Amino acid sequence: MLAAIPSATLLGVRGHPVRVEVHVGNGLPSFTVVGLPDASCREARDRVRAAVASAGLDWPQTRIVVNLAPTDVPKSGSGLDLPIALGVLVANGQIQPESVAGAAFVGELGLDGTIRPVVGIVPLVDAMGDAIPVVSPADLGEARMVCAAARSVATLRELVSVLKGNSPWPDHQPPPPAAQQDQVPDLSDVRGHRLVRRSIEVAAAGGHHLLMTGPPGAGKTMLAERLPGILPDLDRSTALEVARVRSAVGESDRGEGLVVRPPFRSPHHTASLVALIGGGSSQLRPGEISRASGGVLFLDELGEFPASHLDALRQPLESGVVRVARAGISAELPAAFLLVAATNPCPCGSGRWGSCRCSPAQVARYMRRLSGPLLDRFDLRSAVEPPDANEVFGTQSVQAESSEVVRARVAAARDRAVLRGVSSNRRLRGSQLEKWAPLRHDARTLLRELLATGHLTVRGAERVRAVALTLADLTDVSAPLSGELIESALLLRATDSTTGATA
Ligand SMILES: [Zn+2]
Image 1 (cartoon, rainbow, N blue to C red):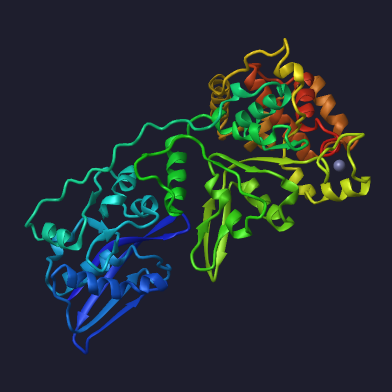
Image 2 (cartoon, protein in one colour; image 1 turned 90 degrees about the vertical axis):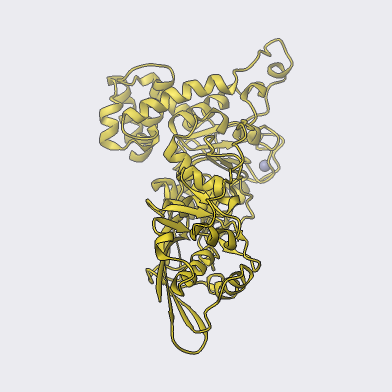
């Protein structure tokens, strides 16, 4: 009178294997679920009983205990409805245990016995190992991203009929993946902005975080939106990571297959800390920084974000992951994003001598809101001015390079970084930089002077060296790095007076 059905539960963006153990014993009719179920998971008992009755099957009028093992992992959501129902049917002998061997089940049950989709199918199926996943028809497309052998059934009655050998597995097909179109706007629409275009290309090629400073309407957002378009396609493991996050927030478009274009997220400065970083009171949910992982996080009006939000960004910026916790449970979520931020040069937004109405104290206070340690994470800082009229309409107006052309250079630079054992040059540290970015005599002298005079910190000097290496990669120059390259990298780090000078 005992049954065990394999399934999985979601924690953050990871699935964890669960064994649903059901014991049907003697005693007064009762139904207990133990093993850290959350509220939605506890409600399974009402849904499951109704679904079993609707499927025309017997509900045992005795004592039923459901144990969700392992008992130290919290179980959330309604995906365990289906394995619980099967466990009850196996435990009271309506289905043979052999018929469920080798399979794992996840799905919500409707009161009429339909099997409904659940969030997080990609990580859930990931956690099922070698077992053949059985899911709702709506979840089949996501399940097959991870396991081509995945199966689906529409109702509990249909599933029982299949398991009893009365009918074959239904032949549901996920909708064919629609051709993925690059919806990202193209760089060729951008007139002028020669220097910022350069910064964006360097940011994409080396994974260097970028801060743009300029008055409203100068084109900061327009430029940032074009950055994902020049990033290369995601490799399979990163694409799966992106799929896990999208699946865990219930955002997967079921017909689109595995998405290989990098994500772009631009949360507003009024977003809550949980929405930005992740976490939550009832369930650990990925935040914007995890949804941007593998792609670009764009923070417009950086100075308007609360200091607590900006402080919380520092650790993920270093490590590429974020730990979130609630009530004794913690989960590690991916947060390997390229940060692009934009800010006005001063509170009035003009930032120009003559038209700015701000006092020096106001400007100083405004810039102080961007904490020093966060500013230090930006390897590239670019002043964005509205483009020159000549560049837009004049004789100098030439067709700008398209995103595709730039993306080819970026991809070649990223390939070089991979040969160095990192995903991008920004990840190179001390001894790796010594090895891969050796300096010519003039470059070494220049960096030593800037360190000695306090114009650069040790960390800043490292960053400048990494950017110079990216510049060399983009122009196909081989190491050792020249003083000229270091100067170019310094120029990209501080091209504006308000945020630059003391790197
Ligand atoms: Zn001003």
